Image 1 (cartoon, rainbow, N blue to C red):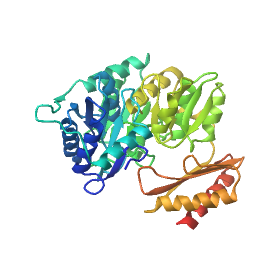
Image 2 (cartoon, rainbow, N blue to C red):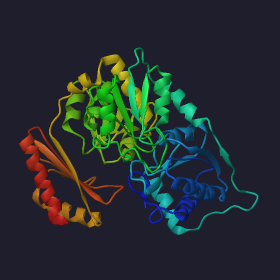
Image 3 (tube, rainbow, N blue to C red):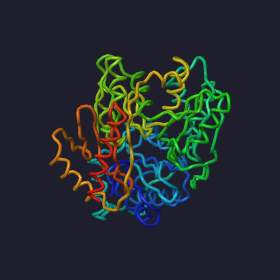
Image 4 (cartoon, rainbow, N blue to C red):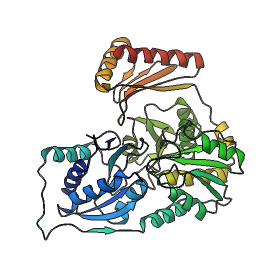
Length: 436
C-alpha cells in the first residue's frame, strides 16, 4: 500500500476517493487534529475532501490548508499543534497520478511502523466512527504560506542577494519565489501558474525537463536557477551559465557546508563517491541509508548527522525540519552563493566521477529483484541487501533496486575511470536483463 514516499498511483485505479476516506479514518485512530493540504492536481480536491471526511467522521479536527507545498504541510503540523499532517500529492509523478503522504509533528514522514499501522487499519476496515454530535471540525488556515516564508527568511542570511530564476514547474513552489524576494533577490519565474496538468514541463526536475530553465538562465542576468517538482519537496539547480547541476554535486556542496569535523551526513546507497571525498575534506563522513527521503530523515534524527539528502533533490537540515523542504534548499543555496561565490565555481570545486544510471520498466519488479538478488549473492562477495543489492567491487560499485513509487528497477554504477564505470554498469544491466 505504501511505497517509500507514501501512497502513490493512477487516479481512479490505485488512488480513489474510497481509499482516501479509509486512510482518513485510519489516521484518525491516533490523532485528534490533522493538517491537510494538496498540490494543484484537480483530483486532489475530491481526494482531500474524502480524506477530511474520514478524519471528521471519526471525531478528528481538520486544519485545511487548501493548496500548499508539501513542506508547508509538514511544518504546519507543529505550527498548529496537530498530531499529524497529510499531503495529497503525487510529488514528481506525472499528472494522471496522485497520492498521500503522512507527516509527524517533527516534520518527519511517518516511519515504516507508523505506515504499516495505518495500512493495517485500512485493511481491517473497522473504523471508530463518531456519533452525530462528536464529528470533527474542518477549518481553513490561510496563514501557512506566510508562516513558511517568514521561517525561511529567518533561516538564512544573504548580505549580497544574487538574481535567481525559479522554475516553479506549475506546482506549489511559489513559497520559494516569495522567500527569495523577501531576502532581496531579483527573481524571474518560469511555469509559475499552478496547474496540476503540468503543461510547462513534466513535474520531476531532471536535467532533460529543465532545459527551458537552463536556457533562461544562460540568456539572462540570473546568477543561478532553481527548479521544483509539483509539491516543492524537491529542489534542483542550474549554474549562471545555464548548466544543470547534478544531484550528487549539490549533495556534496550542501553536506560540506553543513558538516564539520566529526559530523556525519546521511544519504542513500546510490550516492556518489564524490560526496565521500568532498566530506572528507572537512573531516566529515557519509552514512548510507536505504533509498528514499524517509530513510534519510530517520538517520538524520541522530544528533551527529548535520545534513541529509539524496541526489533526486530531497534535502534535509535536521536543525530546521526533518521534511525535505525544497524552498529551504533554494534559500540555503542562495545563501551559499552569496557567501562563497558563483555556483559554477562551487560546482567546479567538487571532483566528480563517472556514474551511470538507468531504469528498466517491469510490472514484476519484486520477482525480478528476487532473481537479481540470488544471482548477485552467488557471484559476488561484498554485497549489501538492505535496499535492493549493492555490490562493492573495490574500485567501483553498482546498485540494483526496485523503485518505491513506480514500476521500475533502477540500476546505478560508478567508478573513478569512465571505461570501468561503463563495464560495471553493463555488468549490472546484464543481471537485470537475465532476470526479466
